[in-house]
Image (cartoon, rainbow over all chains, first blue to last red):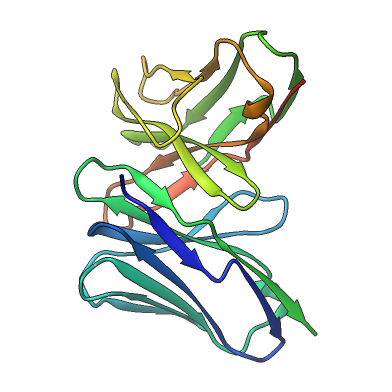
Amino acid sequence: GQQVMQIPQYQHVQEGEDFTTYCNSSTTLSNIQWYKQRPGGHPVFLIQLVKSGEVKKQKRLTFQFGEAKKNSSLHITATQTTDVGTYFCAGLSSNDYKLSFGAGTTVTVRA
Amino acid sequence: EAQVTQNPRYLITVTGKKLTVTCSQNMNHEYMSWYRQDPGLGLRQIYYSMNVEVTDKGDVPEGYKVSRKEKRNFPLILESPSPNQTSLYFCASISFGTSGRQYFGPGTRLTVT
């Protein structure tokens, strides 16, 4: 079945630095979504990427979808304490509409 | 206000005692889904439903049942809960429009002793 791998599992970042989290799928995806979950909260939708090679930006966040629609990345510039949380990618299978989540990248920020 | 509601939010129960976690959405979404979240494993899909009376197994369906008799409701049923079903459960619904945004409920923390 479809698997979505996400790395790194943990990211400790100095405030002001950049970091990237990566997702890779074992199969081609129909689309990929990114979510953020704050401690004690529920996942909140950030964005969806649909097209091969698509790049979208939300302020300091840049999302990319690979040309083969099997990988994606989230890059955050100038990390702030408000960026703390766990970031998940989720890939929608093009075959059966199953949505598979990566294990998440948990981000902590050193002030 | 667009929302997904789950009840109960917290539940402690004993092995073998049947329980139901309710989920309801007010956005007229066709697609609804149940996930469990465990440390280090992320969110794993239990069951999903593309529409009324249409349900499919996700990645970890064993020990769970669902039903979709109405568009807005998607209850999760544990016929005979076991301790390995202790987890945080999320219900979600999706708009398959332009954004594909998935809305999550607040979560149900279940402990089975």
